[in-house]
Image 1: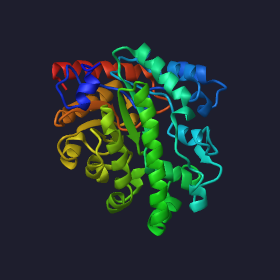
Image 2: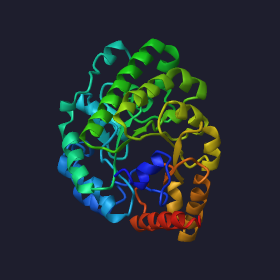
Image 3: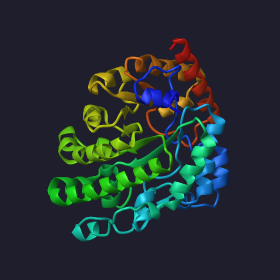
Length: 344
């Protein structure tokens, strides 16, 4: 496992080829996933060890990816501590009672390992089945979890979230502290069970200006990465639309900074302080173009990625639902072959 190209790249060590995995590789783009999920609600599937293992393994069987990513959802720990929520098809997470005051905040209790026994069981089973392939655990970042809890569901403008952050800083800080605790606890459960790396998805933090990120988000994200540093596994930090925040995200303490498709990797290298690997960043929509376009753009990502101290090839966000799995398989092979030969 220590010689895994993925783990070597996370630690900025030499690799035989550029490692590759895909955010949302486990799930909606695979016909075998749709078959096993038929009639099973999303959150139920995330609480059944048999389904977690099967869905996590599906892309590993199909593609020669260098890492598996645990099948779950960032809402799972919130549901586990009693938050009344559901993930509605075509909508996303919906919170029955949004948290907008101190009374709502009091309903958030700490997460204990016993709240998520299915996670421990599934990770243990996966580690045995994956062998030398690393398993990436993950959790939602505090800002993104706060956004869902405050807005009551997905939001384009995050107006209620920002109103609390700007207008009620003490309440905001208290909420972020509890959510950071939740993220830390959920990551620790996965690593204790055998996950080899973790990724924090702060998907919507790109909605925040740099000065507000530094004042109102960074302290809490920094604590997440500091608390899990002693676990000894690589830590990845990713958000969408975070080009202007990449330097600050690097300051948060992760070993790897994920870059979405909007910023070329060689530009990202200049924005992130030395001592970090980068992950990314092919536009997921490019996979719908003719293969010659996909190949040209993938080679460009590889070439730019060589300017980083370590590079993990990924998409700039998750695999889109109607992506052709055969294109992803072909892309994995291209990344491995081109990077091994130095022909990118």
